[in-house]
Image (cartoon, rainbow, N blue to C red):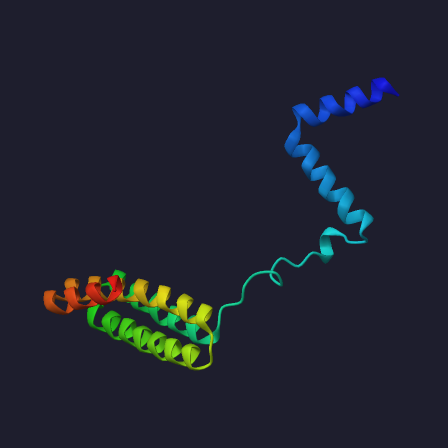
Length: 136
């Protein structure tokens, strides 16, 4: 008995990752779960539709900027800014302070991208204004 406990301790000492994985498998099997039943997406925080829509506009805008379509990229980024400003107002009215903070984070990212787009378009004043709004 003593010999087997020494071997188990030695195994746990030299192979901590492998033993943690085995422990997880044992825990799942004891609780009646299997790896097929574990749904990782259900535990993830879901993105509100308003923020997702703004992120799509931002992604399209950045893609257009990479392709050289600067005016179209500025337009998409402007749509994203407007969508996020609307979402922030909506979340604050409904008492969703955490959602408003998440939207403000995405607004800062989008305004930074919009500032870069204005700089690329040759509008330094508009770029500075967008950067200042992002920093506020």
